[in-house]
Length: 152
Image (cartoon, rainbow, N blue to C red):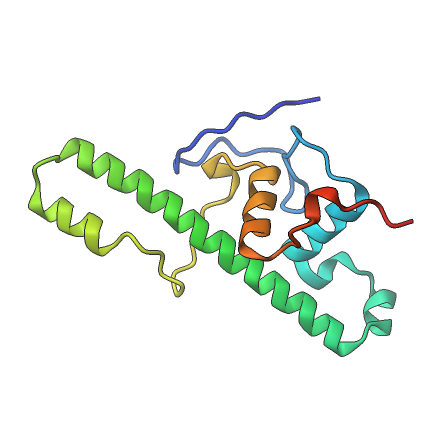
């Protein structure tokens, strides 16, 4: 088992051999049902095959797309917060007495929902469990997610 470490930095890491659909998450374990809910939140309708999609109720499709959109908004906002905090820390340590830096930090510390942060989750050192915890906190995944059991 590979154990990843968390590095809180916005500097991208070396490219990994993992695809977008594969997770680098290794330190915790999700059961099959939890993993399905996580992937459905992250990837939406692409977790279903054509037959399942053709048989699916349009309202259910809409709800899945809505959850996926919410998940991406949460991730985007969170990545911006982490990036802003890292940038603010660097600026304040380099220019502690600068009024311009103080003004920038106070005026531009909130995430912009119109801006799409293109940095990967891995570049922030976030694990799958970090994302799961954030999704539970923000209501993307249910509050009882940690205790959900496999559905046979």
